[in-house]
Length: 435
Ligand code: ATP
Ligand code: MG
Image 1 (cartoon, helix red, strand yellow):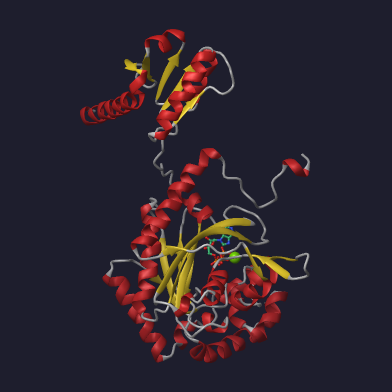
Image 2 (cartoon, protein in one colour):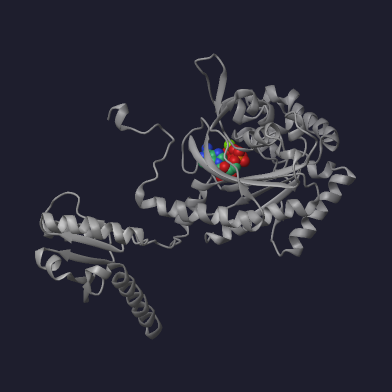
């Protein structure tokens, strides 16, 4: 197959047959976010490369290995966003949002780009739903953001997913920890992968997130940051746990979670599924109190999460969750001849203005082929128009599931269709009750 017939490796097309699922899931995400006071923000797909280097951190895998970076025609270094937090922070500072009423709560849905080895649950273009909350330093903010993620997962029908939390402390308590970590990895320096050997001096915590089997094996027995927390960070973490307990949210403390991006401080968390293989983290997030200031904004606390929508879809698939199906055609108007086609245009306009989903023949094919198509698209009702129907202004509305036909007056087509849809729904309900 030539390149023009082939999607780029690691990208997915979302076909019309699947887009309803996506719309349902995305709808639940935005709806749930609104319950917590988060409104949508939309930021560009690309930013100056520096935005990501400065925020995500230039010793992370994302920046060192995975970014789509290029020079534009003006010679500027541009990067396709590997995640959305950096762009949202850039925007919140530039547009003065963090100087307005706090806490500022925003959410987003958008494509992310990372040059990774494509495999199940790992793509080069993927989508994240996420939230960011600025100006809330208290532990109940952490709990609230975690509760929001949990409620989103519940609302789309995710059943078995575990929440793991940890605290990676503040830059102060991390100093002692980093020293201990450096010592530990220095003692095992020959075992580390090439990238991690280089990271050892600049950012030893990054080794904990390395995907190479030797490094991750070594990381299993390394000192854990939770043992090095200062009193304030300890109290904060206890507060987060208390609020989660109060809200009835179950979690386990996993001292090995560090997250792959540099900006995190204190609370970090992941929602992990046992149903989708190695790429099991559906949602990751935490607090990043220093980032806004580090990016040139005021000193405001911040936190958030990113949820991988493709991974969430994989969990739903693995669980065999049936998402609600929306009917896409209330009525198909089949036509015989030119006059009927013109009448259909008139009726379609009336019906669509009244909010019905209506289709008619636009291929000039025979009646049999039209009815076959109506069946294929799952039309709830059909009506056939010919000269006699136009003359009498009467036609037969056919319920495609039961085969039942009802005489209708074309002059009142919207009322007639509405009544037929209501009748059919009532009949279905009665059937369900007697079953
Ligand atoms: P992983 O450890 O799986 O590489 P990550 O730590 O790089 O994930 P984050 O940067 O925290 O992930 O992104 C948040 C979420 O976005 C992940 O938990 C995952 O659901 C999703 N995600 C990240 N990278 C990819 C990818 N390449 N393909 C699909 N989803 C992804
Ligand atoms: Mg990654």
